[in-house]
Image (cartoon, rainbow, N blue to C red; front, side, top):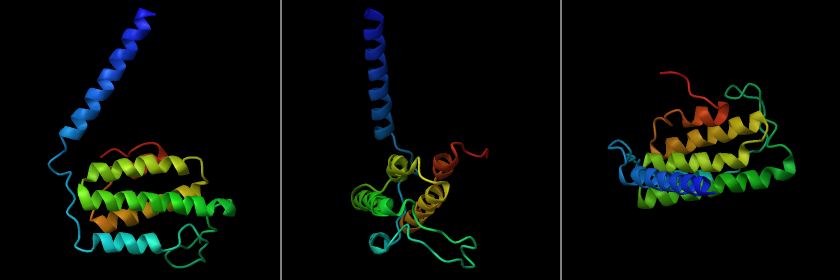
Length: 153
C-alpha cells in the first residue's frame, strides 16, 4: 500500500513539475508571427461548411464522399469549429505555436476512430488553420496524429 501511494505521489509531482516547466519555459521560436488578417482568415474558415462531399477535381482526383456516417457530420464540423474558436482565442491572447499544436492534439481525439478519409480531411483542415496563423510546420504533430509516427529528419 505504501509503495503504491509513494508511486502515485511521485508520478503526480513529476507530471505537475513537467507541465509547469513546459509552460514556464517556451521556446524562443514558439511565438507565432501572425499575418495581419489571421483572425479574419480563421473566422472565414469557421463559417465555411466542412466535411461535406466533394466531386472529383484536379485538386482532389479521388473526390471525397463526406464524413461518414452522414448523420455524424454536424458533430464533426462542430468539433472542428470548436478547435477554430480555441485557436482564435490563442491568437488573441498568447499566440504560441505550442498552444496551437496542443489544441490540434486534443481535437484529434474526436476523429481518432473515424474513417481514414475523414481523418485525412481533418488533418488537411489543420493545415488550413496553420496557413491562417502563419505556422509553417507542425513539427511532425500532424503526421504523428494521422499515422502514429514521425518520419526521421
